[in-house]
Amino acid sequence: MGNSATNYFSWSEQDLLFGIQRGDYAAFTEVYTRFVEKLYLFSQKIELDYVDREDIIQEVFSSLWLRRADLHIENLSAWLYTSVRKQALYQLRKKKYQDRYTQSIIDFVAPFYDPILGTIHEKQLQTYLDNQLNNLPPRAQEIFRMSRNEYLSHKEIATKLDISEKTVRKQIQNVLKVFRYKLGYKTLEGLILVTFLWEKNN
Image 1 (tube, one colour):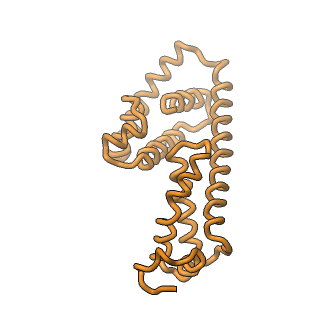
Image 2 (cartoon, helix red, strand yellow):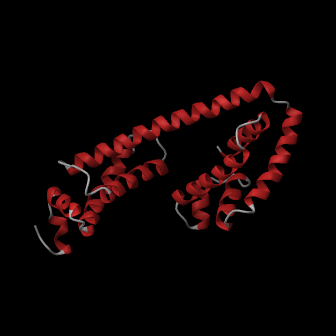
Image 3 (cartoon, one colour):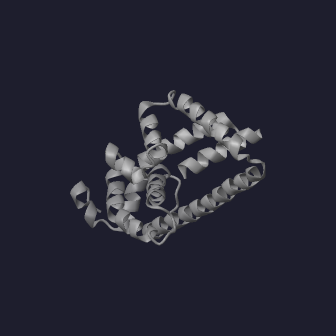
């Protein structure tokens, strides 16, 4: 096993694994460089969008480094591919559950929904959203308005603001979490408002 960082590219997977377990960040960087593109190609077989796949791969590498002292890995490449697959299956199950939950709320609200009252609710919600949004950080406000009012995709927003799609997605998710917490789910009105909010941002 070499000692110079310039020789890491010639290390075997087992050598790199030993290095990571000792806290050698250069060895971890070599593993990332060696496998990240391969894992991206592997992840393309998964029915998730690009940002979700990117999150999964970054999570796997983060886990490798942060849990290096506790992980018992015999085959590094096999562990990486298996971890990506497991994380992907978890995300798919989670997404399927969320989609079912959202539809169940829409189905519940539909029989009680009055189009005239709905218009009133939408106007109330617009005022409510604007007031709540004004209390959030400027960048979160900008991203959310570009998504909701200008109907721009995550990619379009990322290009305009020169940031990553992952950042755009996280900012929008954070804003939605705030709104969902504020609205709650206890009343029929709350359910209608939450449904409206989801529909505007999906």
